[in-house]
Image (cartoon, rainbow over all chains, first blue to last red; front, top):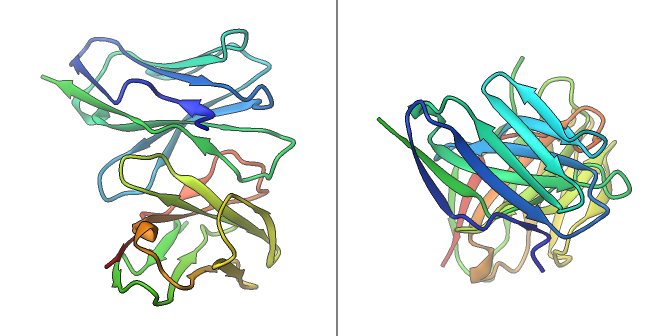
Length: 114
Length: 113
């Protein structure tokens, strides 16, 4: 049972344009959501997070939106840069669960083209 | 400030063997967790250690076990290796273990033949 889903395995965006990565979840106990970026041969790197008490969090070029009623979150990257090309994982956790237990999606490979 | 380091980077084992993977937590972090990432999948939570005690476990059999040492470094042991254990094993550390954000190492790629 996939509790966190990233239905787009890949996305290609032109440099300078907006990249939108989507994530859906099914477990209503999730109350904290994170995005990680992963380059080949490296571990995931934390990018941005959002608590369920918010619907938007912004950090530079990266913005995460949370729609709790739809159990949907998205990551917007504006403007996209070639260095953003990586696999992006959505992850979720519950404050009632094990502290470090993150449930990850299967990832979306973003390619930013020149 | 040193990050999370894992060793070895790559490992090949035969089915039925045992393996030990090692992790040094990021400086100042007291909680370590281990994840398994199979090909084409997201990382899956194996277990977490805090103050040298297992403090939460995912859906993995008992042949997956771990240790955390007083210096907060950690080991993941897998007994009776199976072909499906082939994966990237990621160690992550955090300060309070509150789940956010975890700092990951670069992982150990385990191949079971």
